[in-house]
Length: 284
Image 1 (tube, helix red, strand yellow):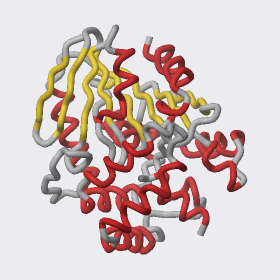
Image 2 (cartoon, helix red, strand yellow):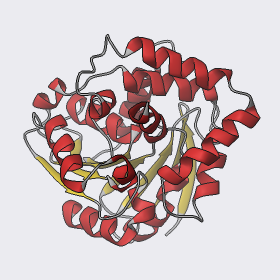
Image 3 (cartoon, helix red, strand yellow):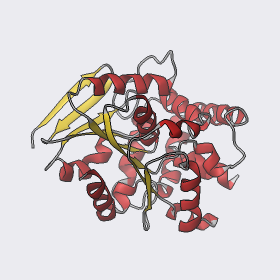
Image 4 (cartoon, one colour):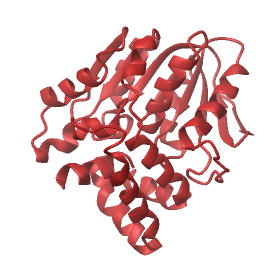
């Protein structure tokens, strides 16, 4: 139950703004292009501090996915992941040069898919605390098939909660996601503002999608920034967490894995100096 409990929580310049086929996009800075993809139920504002620095030398495109934060939900007949990948693919094709992707959690998973499907458009990708198969990070015996029932149950539980119950759950779980006390209430509000059907479907698909074998087809340079400190109370160590990342990413040809010192899931909030050091070194 502890592993299931932790998995539930883990998944959870000038400036211009535009809505592009459901994507809320904010652009700032000038230079080589970076596209930022936030995680589950997160607003693009999660990258504000990162963009404040990188926009000095890069053109930063910050996305908020439809259904998350205050960006309205859209129809998803093909499912969440396929729909979001399609929207971001269309946006990337509108850029005249290669782009760098920086994705957190769910955004990191989407960045892996885009790196495979758009090899000539993606210069490099930075994956912030994300796995190619979330369920296997907590249950090595997990498969897409045997996780379906549990994922369905967890989605139904999420959908059945009242607004009061859902807020209480978010407030209880968020300290496992970040140590930044100023950001805690902001992250909770993003969860409450987000469309719960979209969040539930995204959560379900992440739990039941195994992308590990597909990594063999990715030649894009990848930097993975992993977190482990929130699992310390459950016996997790930096070494054991890094081994999990290495196992999950073993088929990627060009991958570098770095573990954050004391961050929880929102590494860019909890270890900002370390995060910026690793990001700037990799993209420059």
